[in-house]
Every structure is written in structure tokens, then in C-alpha cells.
Amino acid sequence: MDRNEIAGIGEIGLLGEVVSGQPLLAVEISADYPEKPRVLDRVSFVIRPAEILGLIGQSGSGKSTIALAVPRLLELRGGRIRGSIRFCGRDLMTCNASQLRHIRGSEIALVPQSPMSALNPALRIETHLREAWRAHRREGWAFAKEPTRDLLIRMGLPADDAFLRRLPRQLSVGQAQRVVIAMAVMHRPKLLIADEATSALDPVSQNEILALFRKLNREMQMAILYVSHDLASVGRLCHTVGILEGGRLIQCGPAAGLLASLAVADGRLPGAPGGTDDRFLSSVNQPLFCEG
Ligand SMILES: Nc1ncnc2c1ncn2[C@@H]1O[C@H](COP(=O)(O)OP(=O)(O)OP(=O)(O)O)[C@@H](O)[C@H]1O
Ligand SMILES: [Mg+2]
Image 1 (cartoon, protein in one colour):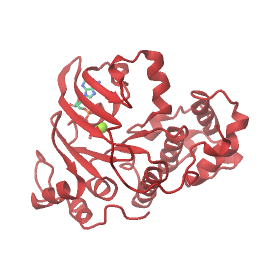
Image 2: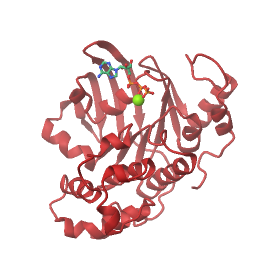
Image 3: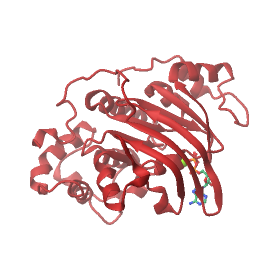
């Protein structure tokens, strides 16, 4: 592997926004927690290569449960999954722990709901990046350090030694989110799962992260499962949208049509307690593939 290929944003060239071909991921699952059965009830969807699927729904509808279930992390949280999770022709439900460890991080990466909780408060940023590197590569950190600095710069982060020496508490939430995303895309996964990756951010940082996701999608053909309750960002980023309600996927289809039909329904998600979501209504008028 060439050094320049590490998270080689910009190395591959623009690959366009064509979403076609065989599914990269085909999910048909139900899931339970010990004290909450049927938290997901026969949820079924596909993601094609380079597709961005937005998953929206009320709080508690099961979005994070899906985000954890796809890379088979739900069991580590005490959950149980039934069904199939076909990824690149393999059923992840039949993979053993070692196969799953390989797939996670190198082929499927998760940006979890809280960036700060994804970072170890006792470890410096460089240590986080080095560990993320060593999880999937034999070459030493000396090999990867400079390309990783390039990656940080592409993420809009400082890449100097002083920044690498910082602890997570010395970062802003937006910087922490970018570090977590840098760790997630370091090995150029085919699928990035982002769970509320922009929800905790101010509008400027939110726009920058959305632009970053568009860039990763277009330049690396990275498919993204974008979990959010922020309909505006979903409207701006996603090709397709799935709506989750009470653990069931009640609608799934092209983003423009589905979000427009929600606009007709007064900008509310099905099952929402009422009221117009202005953020959502404003998103309907925005171009789906606007440049960041
Ligand atoms: N470890 C757990 N044990 C038992 N129940 C859980 C557990 N984790 C989540 N749940 C329940 O499962 C349901 C789905 O939770 P989940 O976190 O997937 O929702 P969500 O759509 O991501 O919500 P939010 O938008 O608030 O992040 C909720 O009712 C939640 O209380
Ligand atoms: Mg959640």
C-alpha cells in the first residue's frame, strides 16, 4: 500500500455521485435488549456502493440500535440480533469475533453518537490515531504519521505536534468529532456509519462536517449510513432516506420525494407529537448535492 493511499481523499479523483449496482449492505434484522424485546422489528434496507442513506426517526425509535447492530457491536451492549446483515457478499451474522474485528474499522467504521465518549480521556490524540492505525496495519507508526497529518489537515484540524499531544478534554466538541471521523476513515472503509455526527455541533461546524462527508462520499466512493434527527442535514446530504418509528422502518426511498412528502405532512415525522419543524421545512428547498 502506498503511503499516499492512507485515507486517500483526493488521491482517487472524483468518482461522481452515481448510486448503482449490487447492494453493499443488505440488512434484514430484528433486535432485542434483555429488558426491551423487539426494539427493532423486521427492519430491512439496503445501501449501495457510494450511497448515502439517511436514517431518521423520533428519539427512542431505534436509530442507534441499527447503527450498532450493523457492525455487530450491539451484542457488546447486551443486545441480541436476529436475521441477516449481508455486507460485500458475506453475512456478518455468521462471522466470528476475529473476522468482525477485521471488518470493523477497515471495511465498516462507526462514528458513535457522542464524540467525547469515543475518545479515551487519558490518551493523547496521537495515541488515538496510532492505535487506530495499528489495529489494521503492520507498518509502523513512522510510516503512517505524515499521511495521518495530511488526513488531519483535510479534516480541518491542526496537525502540528502540539495538537497531537493534546488530550481529548483540550479539544472542542467539533475538533473531537473530526478526530473521531479521522480515526474512522483512516483505513478507507467502504461504509461509514455516522450516528448523530453533527447533532452536538454549532451550525458552522455542522456545515463543515457535512461538507466533509460529501467529500468522503464523492472522492472515496464511501457509502454512508447517516443517522440523524436533524432533517435539514439529512435533506442536504442523503440520496435516500429511511424513516424509523417504534423499531419499524415505515418508509424508505429517494430523499427528495420522501422529504417533500413529509413537508406536505407539515414537516413532522410520523408519530411526532405535533408542530412544524422549521429546520426541516427550510431543508426541503436546498439542493441535495450542494457543495460544501
Ligand atoms: N442497553 C439498552 N437496554 C435496554 N433498552 C435499551 C438499551 N439501549 C437502548 N434501549 C432502548 O431501545 C430503544 C431504542 O434506543 P436507541 O438508542 O436505538 O434510539 P434512538 O432512535 O437512537 O434515540 P435517540 O434519537 O434518542 O438517540 C429505546 O426505547 C431505548 O430506551
Ligand atoms: Mg441514538
